[in-house]
Image (cartoon, rainbow, N blue to C red):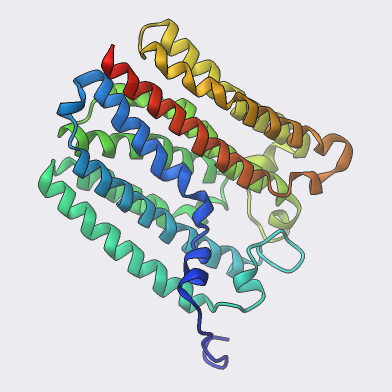
Length: 304
């Protein structure tokens, strides 16, 4: 198709929209929260905040590149089609796959360059963490064929982002940052899980196998509800155990958003799968608010 169809022209706004920028909260804010947690552990002066800013930019570039690559994979596999709740750009030929691939490659290249620069400024350990993240991003589309996409996403955004942020922030891995993997990783996972639950029927037709599909729609909705609630319980438990300063409980203010998401998810039981449309965006909004509140609370903990 690419050889016979004229390449469409697009504005900067359309290119940015193609990256699904609304989802960037699931990659950028865990890095910010991790840096704030490290500040509460080591003191704000011990954190290299310039490196943190560069790391957030690099993570977002990788995320954007991965989104584009995933969209191409879903389009070519047939998972994204006119019958599915798909991103319309490729399905409706507003963009060509080759445009997405070129844009993805450019974003990856810039992200990798930032990664090398940060490795020079901090530790070469970053190359191992970043390299693993790059490979797992490339393999994401394939992982959906063998029920591994949820694990892939959790490891990238719930583990590697924390470890990488630790390296660039304080020059080494502080394994305590993995305490953030559960709350932030699960909310990130809820974004993917909401989308996968909505797409169970269309994914099954093209051989894609997700955790939501293995569970079935009703149990998948139950798992989504758990993903929304467990982060709050985890942070409360960490505070009770003395692993986080009490201001981290500020994240509990996001419970109202989680309650709204749960209400929408539960609507599935009497309205059907159409009730789940938009739940992924709502989940990303929860990540935005939860992470900002948690980061602010952890940063406030440096004053105690």
